[in-house]
Amino acid sequence: MRYTEAMTERQIQILAAIIEQYAEIAAPVGSITLAKLFGVSSATIRSEMVKLEELGFIMQPHTSAGRIPTDQGYRFYVNTLNDAHANEAQPMQLDRGTRALDARVNTHGDRADHAIRSAVDSLVDLTHNLGLATIGDQLYMSGMGNLFSQPEFMQGNHTQAVARLLDNLEPWLREAAPNEPLNVFIGAENPIGKTSGATLIISRFRSPYSDRSYIGVLGPTRQSYGKVMRLVRHAGAMLEEVL
Image (tube, rainbow, N blue to C red):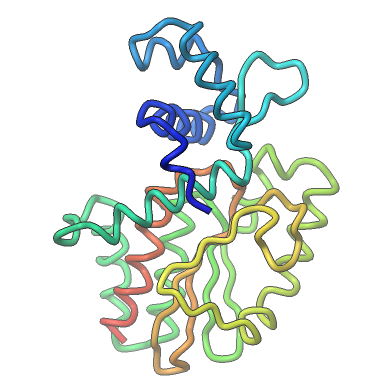
């Protein structure tokens, strides 16, 4: 569902700022912080926050004065990023992260399995998430320590839901075969472990093993979507080109 018509440009920007700040500090974002960022009063920000809460895009956890994004808020933000990518006149220049990924993978261009593992390991280093890829009939995973060191996954119920998602991910990928070049499953959108508070970002690519090979990351819903989506999208495209 698209809400752009019901939102002002400033509300869209405030939602983006809450998501990006929350990714960085892992704590609810308050009106004072945002007021400084936008050069308006705290009262103005609080008024805009009320509108975003009414839309279901942010929420106030417990008695905190700050707000955090909801899965619905993240979905709106991710759709906005995807729209921006689709409307780009030409591909963005490679940043330091994508260049590092390229350099690491290119040293293994003669061995598909090594190249894919290398790309996963690069994503782990660059995103601080768990990295994963299908290599033939196997699921290669790296960076488990990254995943379970996140504050969201310190609680038992979240940990169990994430573990369930990981246990069932390979058969689900084989059965569902997501068809988009980049697929983003946020929180309850995940096919398994809906209460995990995790986001799965995966790219489909063609490899010597399959026309439906996958590479991506699993992390908390609180993450830098712009950066991570760009890296995962690039990893898939690059592997398809190299292999």
